[in-house]
Amino acid sequence: MEARREPPAPESATLSVVSDGSDLVARCRAGEPAAFRQLFREHRTSVTRLIHRMTGGSPDLEDLVQETFVQVHRSLGSFRSEARLGTWIYRIAINVVLMHRRALRSRPSFAPGPSDAQLDEADLPDEQLARRRRVAALYRLLDRLSEKKRTVYVLHELEGLSPTDIAKIVGAPVLTVRTRLFYARRSLLADLAGEPALAALADALPPLSDPAPAGAEPHKEPA
Amino acid sequence: MTPDRIDRALREATREARTEQLPKVDWTAIEEQLPMTRVHTLPPRPPTFRPWLIAATFALAGSAGAYAVTLVHPHAAQVATTRVSTPTTAPAVPGATNADVNGDALAVGAHVVAGDFAQSVVHAGHARWTLAPHSEGTLLASGDIVTVRLDRGSVTSRVVKSSRTETFAIEAADVRVAAHGTEFTVSLGADGVSVSVTEGSVLVGPREEPGQGQLLISPAAKRYTRTGLPLADDSSGLEALGGRRAGGRTAAENAPDGSGTTGAAATSGRLALEAPASVKKLGARKNATGADADAAPSEVDQRPSDPTAAGLEAATASVLRLTQACFKERTIAGEGVRVTAQTSVTFRTLPEGGVKRVVFEPPLSPAVQACVNAGVSAIQTDATRNGFQVSHSLDLER
Image (tube, rainbow over the protein chains, first blue to last red):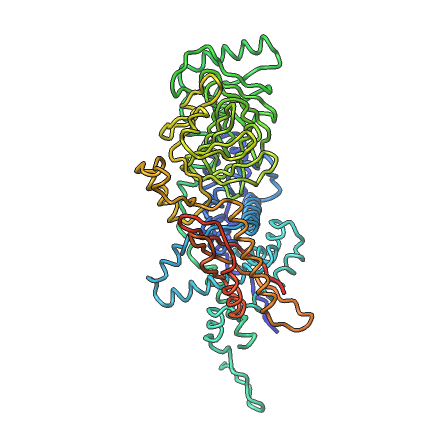
């Protein structure tokens, strides 16, 4: 029986540490120029991280961050205080990413050549390079998931949000979020062996414990 | 490979992704484009403006009632009626502008008339469009896609970069010019519409068919008929429309002549669809030295530097069709089994037309790749000076 893993430690979860934002929103609505700048500075890191993870390292990252905050500015009038500001901004960021992905899929794009990340790879130590490749492989797997499954997986596993928070962001019942999470994980597990970097990682992992031979005494921890 | 190892590998890769460092982001550049900052850094209003504006406001309010303008401060401009006019009796001062109008406060259908000064309308965080002196425009739509009809003269627009494909458009006669993170000028003349792009790109096409047309990438200038058909791309034609080489000046700096036509910032006359970065850089270098735009036709390659939109679409569709056919034919699966694949295809064309190579990422099976390689030789594309490269995502199914 697989032990249920607790949500990741909140090393990247920032929703809880950001103020509820109602004062800030009120100041933004009042046209205070510094207020929106403060809002941007408070939330830019978390929004950038989310977009980076949702897109798997898109070269359009900065454009998407800017677009998110432009949308936030435009929609401040419709912000209701029952949602936390961070949750609301996350929702906008996810919508911006989804619109971006749909636009990319519906029209040809032009390849600018190898990305900076690819060019930098030559200078990386082996382990760091392998790690970067594993992360890239994970993002490729995520890219194959449906939008809904990818969103909940990123929000839960990478952003460290609880299903309750995710439910508020994606506008779905908590049970639906858990279901999507389950199927997302199952799809990832099914496809993982197809990614050489991740397959190598799986092969290289040490065994948890060797199964005890039949008839042998079970191992006992010292008292 | 046991399920336990796979599960742990997924957890480990997820943990690595969670602790991955964020790429460097230029916060300052983003912040400069944000609405609050943007409003705050608008250029100061010319000191000569206020008396004329106040006089015009009172005059209009007193005589017409329904036509009133309320412009008190550029940061809090409120327009109460559907017509915004600026004074016409003041002497023209080169480069002078009126106070900005708050475009977000304008009702759809608002008619904006510039007098002897240029008139800017600002949609916070979105776009700024500036009518040249004696030009007129009408706000046709606001919100996510701001659309302005140019009724007379010339308008220069600057649009904030956005991830969406189209956020701002100018319509002139039956021509629609849609922008995406761009600075460009549209001028309406008696016999056509001229478009010049100083930054970014615009899609120029028929008004009735949004999303269709030719992509114009900066620096470029092009003339079109009033129905949206491209005219000969030469500087004499541009001048015939009322344009002149202006070294990148904006419409606001180029007052229109008596016929309502105006100068466009014709810097190179290069019409271009999106091309590889190297091609674009080459074009920019040529333009910077001034050696390209006026070269005699016999001395230069007659092939266009970039494909047409139709040629690009046709080439892409051909490669996608071929890939789908090969995937269906070469993928082995049992009866009733549905096989799907998601990948992206990148192909490069030859200058004389034809496809050079097709790459899939993630790769398809060797059998499918071989089938595609064998089939691409039959695909013919537009001949271009340097060839071009296209990437497209695709879903395959057998």
